Structure formats: C-alpha cells, structure tokens
Image (cartoon, rainbow, N blue to C red; front, side, top):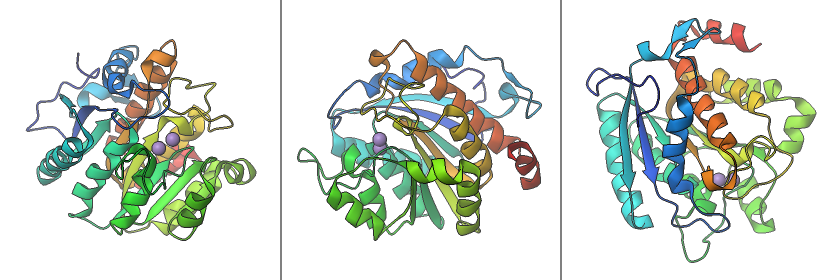
Length: 289
Ligand code: MN
Ligand code: MN
C-alpha cells in the first residue's frame, strides 16, 4: 500500500516517501519497523484536499518508493545514507518514515554533504548517550552523532535525559525544553528558530514521543507532559519552507489503537502541504500566526 495520494512517478516527483523497517536498537517497546505500514494505512483516512492550503495532495508530486528493510544497524546506516544521497542528487526532498530514531543520522549525513544544514529535532529525549546497549549509532545517541558531524542542532520539547547527556547537550546544541515551550509558547520559540537558522536549510526530524502520550501513546519510549499535535503542526507549517529533508520516527503501532499512526500520517501530510503550497514565505506566516 502506498501513502495516500502519492501518485507521482519518481522522475517527476518532488517528494519521495521512504519507509525504513528497522528497530534493532529499540530498548523499551519495539515494533517501530511496523510504523511505515501503519502510517500509510492511516493516510487513507484523509481527504486529498486541504482547505487551509486550498490544495490537493494528489497534485503535489509525491512519490512513495516503498520500504527498505535492514537486519542490522551498520547495514541500515550505510545503505540509507546511499539511498538518501541518491534522492538528494536527483533533487528530491526525502520524507523518511521510521523505524527508530537512528534512521535520522544517515539521512542528515547525506544532506549535510550537499548543503549548509541545521538539524531541528522535536523529541522528548536528548538522545545524547555516548552509547546505549553497546550501540554507538543507536536511537538514544542520534543527536550526539549528528553533533559530531558538525551539523548545528536545535532540540525542541525536551523533558528527559541522563545528567551527563544534559551536560553534553547544553554545550553543543540549542535546547528548548518542554517547560520552556509551556512558558513562552511554541510561536515565540519558532520565531527564535526561524531567525537563528536564516539562510540555512533545515533538516526536520519528528520523534513522535515529542507529542504527549495522551495523543500519541504508541511510541518506543513514552514521556508525559509533551506537545499537542496542534503545536507540532504549527511548528511543521512554520519551518517547512526551509526544510530540505524530513523524517517522522518512533511510532510503535502495537502499543495503541492506531492513534499515533493517525496523528503521524496527518503530520506528514501537513509537512507536504506546507512545503509544496508555499507560494511565498509570507503565505505560511499568515496561516500560522
Ligand atoms: Mn529520539
Ligand atoms: Mn524520544
């Protein structure tokens, strides 16, 4: 099954959806390898038409290239970087569906070779572990590995990490904790991000556990007191015009009644509409303010 309204052929497409069937370093709840299928299924719940953008998804040149399945972490990291590089060479915007958060690293590696990039990650967790269960490139180390590439990092929605992760992260990346989001409001923080990333391309990574588990309980490591889906939509709409690569990771469909995939599919659509329908950057500002 393809993502709904992704009828474009590869050659003429602008966006390429790529599912990654890999959850080999997941620690608490596994099963994110089933997320691409669940997200695609959920995507068929929605009308092709979006009123806010007055646009039809079927007209937005979205191609679904299907899934890649990996038996181990190294294989995934090497192969996904190659595949993503090919998409970037062909001037596509990769829309990667995890799988666990470790898939973000090879995607960013591929894009960072081609352009000056800032990574904006929405996540409950810092993901700054030096290694976790023997894995240096596992999902709990993804932010640390990205920072080692020299790619500037902005993390939003943070509310969990070990003491030494905070120590490391605070010296390396820009962190907007969940407390800060509540205090200042998401729009204020987005204004900040927009001005600090000006002139650079953004890689946008959505770890679904950034969202409060009451809205998206089917994730690998649920963490209460999170973002609402609407706050995340606001963020996606606001940042989409600058984005050159997007992923949505960490949904574990077996742990809920389909809600997380329903929200996830909607966020992917929101990204596609916001990115493709931006006639001018002013248009998107009008919509989100
Ligand atoms: Mn994460
Ligand atoms: Mn997380």
